[in-house]
Length: 287
Length: 296
Image (cartoon, rainbow over all chains, first blue to last red; front, side, top):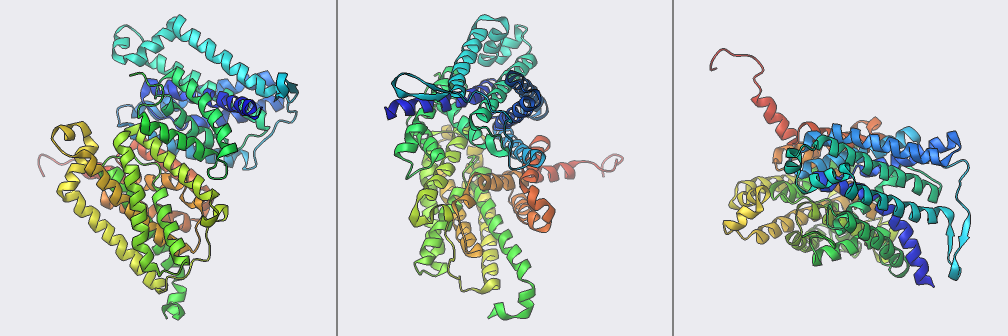
């Protein structure tokens, strides 16, 4: 029974990881940038969600605003920070991104205070009992459900619509795509918007699950999401999804069985290093 | 006893600051060997300072004198460095950056859970180094100059040229028949051993260490020193490390905003001058400030 419970907990955590890591993968696939500052947009989404929800009393409005603000924030970040660095070696953008992330984490602390914020009327707290004695909060069920829905819709958009196909074409061969009349600029903007909106969305879910947003809430997902996209074989969307869920489950088991030797982060990274030593291109890389 | 000298008493603050500076410069130069010279990005360099620091602390508490812990700290940090260096043979570029970051989290995660390493509380009341404050500072400065001289020497040597080649284009170096893995391992061994040395100084300077002092933020801080100075430039890195390590102490206002300033500077430097201060200096030097008629 414990095993099923741990798997369930792992999948809930993994869904959050997946939402955050998908945006990172989109960016990496397109620009080959390790976008650490992505987690700042996750935090931003959490704050916007809590503030809007507290002001309007409507959770859906909170989700919508969080995704919108984070999405626009992502596009702005791309235009100001990354676009001018595309011709530089990759570590330049990586270090710039780390700098941006550290600075924004501190900015959140200075603007909103170190102690964080909570929902005035926390919602979705109802407990659900499933067959076999499994118990969930409504929010936990909805996290998994909405992640699955969003990823399904995105996959459909990517393979069935003109914009999605343009994105795919740009990832596989930017120059060729451009010569077929695809605007690289538009594709990049769209990717940053969608990826960042997903991060903002995930931020509100984490805020709901913990009923807390704090300045440092992005630090663990930022490093963890990097580990996930590396595990998934940088730039591969299905790989990222599988790696996110896998890592969630491994962490859930690890904290029970290895908790005395390693903490949660260390378990995730021990797994990452072990995988990379065996498969340097990641678990699910396209060869 | 130098500590009893009233002259020295009033200089305590400056002595402490200078020692901090020397340790930071040593640490930054050690990363510069790996990232600057050899082009291997490391996001977990604080781990090796941590290994050195913990080695020195454990041995010091066991009764060994400071000068004996110093080489042991270097050896252990260097050994772990070779292991991580072996990983760098397997994974490259972005993958290596994430792997080294993982090593950093692993180190902190392991140390925090070990009772005999002080766990969450860290190790305190480390025995005195017996050199006096001035003597300790002098030794740190001498070692720091030594590391700088070694860096300059390596940069000009055959090895330094190979490092540069690996940083520029690893595959071409392989084609040229260079034993790339050997040189990468050498860079990691030297860089991490020197980081271990800076760790031993750190332990005896602060008399207290905890796992969090060698976490991801510290790894980024030292990387920011290297990047800020100009990746690969020895004088640039020395100046950047010296400045960035004492800035928070000089401006108490910044103390609270230390990370905001670090992050902001790191971003702005990358955004506007990816070659750091060295690149900036070069740019300024090559700019014609006064229009001159013809050749001057």
